[in-house]
Length: 188
Image 1 (cartoon, helix red, strand yellow):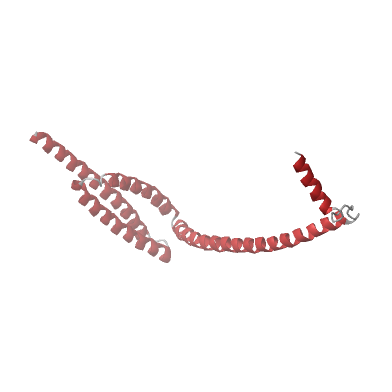
Image 2: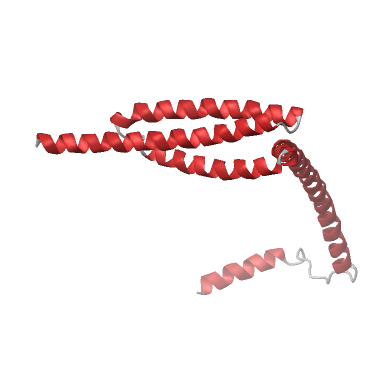
């Protein structure tokens, strides 16, 4: 132990007179705080500038996306509203028939899993798409030329034909399944 104490005494003895033992000035704390504030102010200002630029870029991007989306949606809404304004009853009928057609198409898609019915389903979908294209042409004519009872009747007939077609195809698929089941039972 004595050796360690001697080494420490020797160390402090060598440093005597070179250590700063005076109290800091009265303004030392205020000067230190002012320097810290200046440093923080500089970093805060540069961070604010970076944040502001980033914020403006993000805001501009959002505005551009929102404007583009609104333009597309507004265009689609105007097209469907045109039919409602030209022929409100037809618009209601279209909504009703479209719901039924979509239900029948869902049933048809469920039947698309066997090889026996795949060709029937594919042909039916092609026919429905042809009728849909015809319907779009009729709709355009109605909107452009105004209310014409012949066009309205043709549009309603088109919707009804699609429903009848889908129902007939579903019935045919049921018949094919029945025949397949009966044939399979008779073979065994």
